[in-house]
Amino acid sequence: MSDDLDALDLKILTVLVKDGRAPATQIAERIGLSRPAVADRIERLERQGIIRGTTTVVDPAALGRNITAFVSCRINGQMTPQVWKAFQRVLKSDEVLEAHTVAGDDCYLIKVRTGSISSLNDLVSRLTAAPLGLSTRTTIVMRTHCEKIGGVVLGEDA
Image (cartoon, helix red, strand yellow):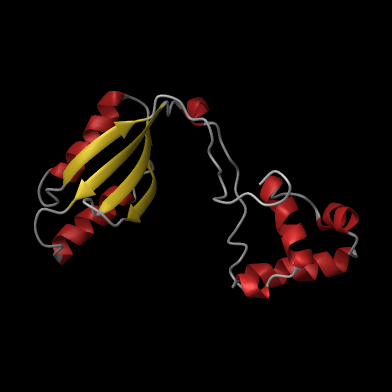
């Protein structure tokens, strides 16, 4: 997919990563293209799935989500359809931010944000209780030094 990106596409993405609401006119002025050309490129990048959407980033503390943790999970038995369905229910919780299948001793790494240690314990209990019965190891974040919301940083600050 990145082979399809030229220097102008990268400049557009650099602006949009920093400000997803930047108007095409502003982007055009910054990178030296016409507004219609920028709009066409953005539309193509969206169609190709390179731009997957725009979002509003809300301070978790404003919502009372002061606890960030990573929960490493290991399957103890078989991933039956019933277990998979229960796992999917937990992942749909608004406290779960990310879930990844990982290599190594664990099977999954889940990033969560909760309002309290008690609610973190409740979430972990859902992972360890039947029918899931996962083994877990929880790491609570003491302080976040860097969090790249879009997953990547482009441009001179990268």
